[in-house]
Length: 111
Length: 115
Image 1: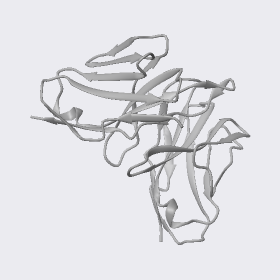
Image 2: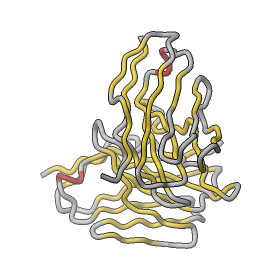
Image 3: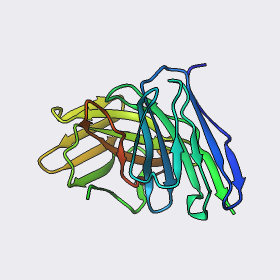
């Protein structure tokens, strides 16, 4: 089925650990995005990618790393998780200047 | 800095009436504006897109207007139903560097349609 899937849906990790959130899309969209959603802040852009091997920082990139070796995958890595990174993370994909399609989200808790 | 404001208070509307949600922005010149619906525990779902040279867009019971002079968009749901209850997000986008650099979202308005 066409769509965008994130894994895992829920994750609890300890402070200082590395954790990777996965995102996979089947539309062959050029653009992919990672957002985090927190109460009082709404959705904020972490990183985005215009194509394979092209990534750029968004509004809140510190503490995160992304890669895009294949068009369909866009993993987000927290190199050393902190409690402030407890959030709901959404991956999205889109064509050029068109609507974005969001995944179901990953709820990450850092303890 | 760029700022997008949506009604922070929940909006309560009687079933059958028209719900009107507001999105105001400052320090931004968007090329297009989008509205999304988000239900609890789910990702946002796209509803409508309107570009800077368009005044109004419609889709079934939904209508969006875009006034770049007032820096405002209005989102209308006519003949509202309890199933329309959700959080509605306004998002702005721009053309930069020849590519899409992601959307800037407002915090959303929680809409409650009462039977």
